[in-house]
Amino acid sequence: MTLRVLGVDPGLTRCGIGVVDVEKNRRATMVAFGVVGTSPEESLDQRLLVIATSIDEWLDTYEPHVLAVERVFSQLNVSTVMGVAQASGVVIAAAARRGIPVALHTPSEVKAAVTGSGTSNKDAVTKLVTKILRLDAPPRPADAADALALAITHAWRAGNGTSTKDAVTTGPGSQSLTPAQRAWADAEAKARRAR
Image 1 (cartoon, rainbow, N blue to C red):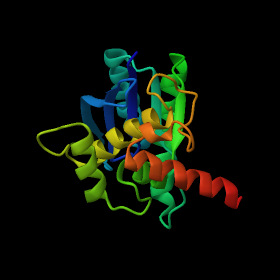
Image 2: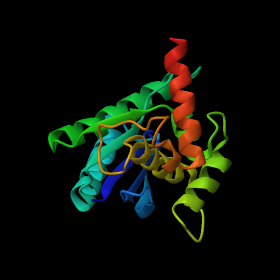
Image 3: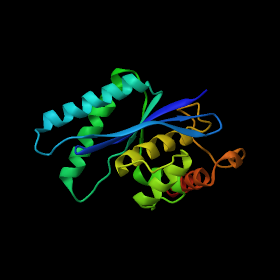
């Protein structure tokens, strides 16, 4: 069975969206990607409506099994965090209306899963997403590449690419993981032990 994941890199100005199919052997294939843009000149309600309408279209068109959304994290710019949180809420609600499960992943989880390092920059993420998905050219803009990375991360975290519940683990059976997946699983295990 193939797992279809729709990844969302939320934002009010640019909301990256990417759809990836992942086979049981973890081979990931890009289905579609894009960016929903809104103008800061528009009112907040209209901007959120544009995002809501677009995500509805993506969910109806691609019928994902699960939605992977970047977890909102604290930044110095409170207005940016608020915009990301508002866009995330609209996206999560759209999935909930359809009964589609939602998973939240931090930026460092995504970087670690895709590149093997939780501190990688956007260029490294884009480069590895291009390689993992066997694309001829990098997905642009970076928001779209980030959305694809979120989708890949979730599918790999699901374990065998067919479940949205099982986490990637280390130990027996982990030899089937890619180096990036092993690094991510090791980092996650280390973080759990540190708590």
